[in-house]
Length: 453
Image (cartoon, rainbow, N blue to C red; front, side, top):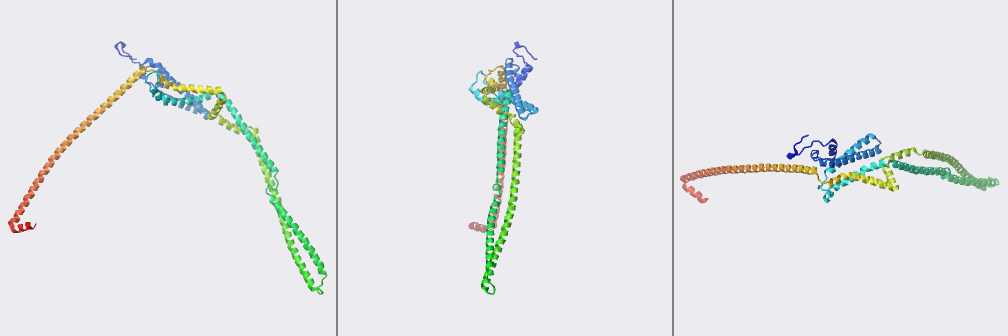
């Protein structure tokens, strides 16, 4: 430990605050190096850190139990519980360390509005954490309610099975009482009736024709081909005609008899097939009834297993818990207070942060923050000065370079102008010499050409 003489106005620098305080300060997200120099604020930030820590532990237990009710795996429940606890721990730590506080014991309007999003988040976290723990607290009552729900659902499903059995028995009775027409073979009876009527008609016609033929044959005996050839011939023709009619009726009679026989055979086959089909349907219905009765007698083990999977999960336990609260007002009130308790615990660090008055640590931290801010501003100012200086130097250099270039350009332009003047003068002298030579050679021609021009 490094210490100096306090009487010389030099403060003692503390390098360690104790393992418990150090751990809770980490949970609170405090600057430990600064906080170590403020012993009066040790317990304050240790309390905030403890609240955040125990909230995270409760979230860990809550999340682990919630996942265990879903997957029934201890390993997954432990892993998710640790993950969920660390997530809530980080959120609470972030919420507390980003809160605005004016350093007074009262909560100002600005503090409340700035902390409102964090308060709403903390309320949601409190509800989420409290729900699985409520399920664990009321586990016995929830299990009893789940059993009641199983019995009710099994009763409903058994009732449905009984209704199905009654329907199948009614179907069997209808099949047993079904006649041939209902079975779809009534058409054969109608055909038999028509064929029977036609057969009777043909038989009557056949007898009538036979009687007429006998009468004509008796009449024919009274005539002789020699004595009464005309009457004999007429009577013979009538007999042949009647015999032809009787033969035609006989052939039709045989056809009707054959059709009637075929229809009776098909009718018998259709009756046997309909009866066989009816017996098969009755056997199928009897088998279905036996299966349904077996399901009822065995309490339908498949449905029981399915109900256990449905009702023992997290959603099923929530439904059972809500039914408990609906049936028992005391349970609803107790669950409400438990939820409020966790909400208060979850929002406590946020409100404590707004309500705690500033201490040495806050002053020291503000001083450090101010120092950093001032140094940062100074650094920014120095950088701005350096940049401005470089800009001014660059500007001055550009001005000088522009002036030098302008001066050089001026000298060049003067030289160019001088050279152009010399060239022009030389050209003028050369032209003058040529013109004088023309005048000397032939003055009159030169004068005449100029006058024409």
